[in-house]
Length: 173
Image 1 (cartoon, helix red, strand yellow):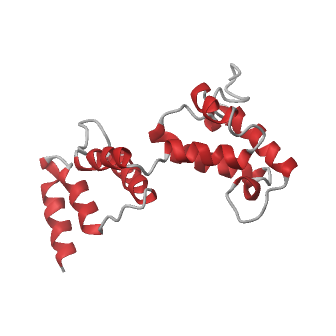
Image 2: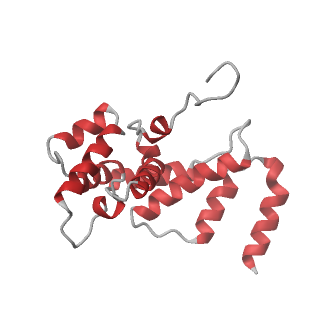
Image 3: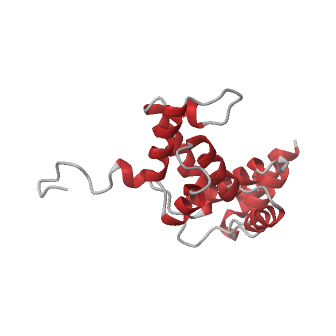
């Protein structure tokens, strides 16, 4: 940033679009990346579809995608999906948003052991819970609202006891 405070910020749009290889960040990254592809009018090309993808646009999708990947993720796609953006995105989804038992067990463990950290805001705590819940739902796991609420309330400190009692009574009605 310029010394005046004006000018481009240090965090460019590209840095926010770069995937770091952390599977817990994949879903958020994919949402940002697909929004970026929409701005380029390439989103319909990269998403899986019954239609055959336009070859030139699909190559453009691949070129955009690989610019946003860390080295490990790039290694996953560069040999099996060269110039095929649609296939490359599917490989990433299969790898990072896996629906296998080990990943599902990890997500359930994360949700059931959820605890609000001492200096964490309630909003940040709920966002962490929502990430695990969304990942489980994306893995086609069925979670009841009651279970979700119970897991979230269980992780709150004792100072939230009156709130927990109130929410529990409202849910019973």
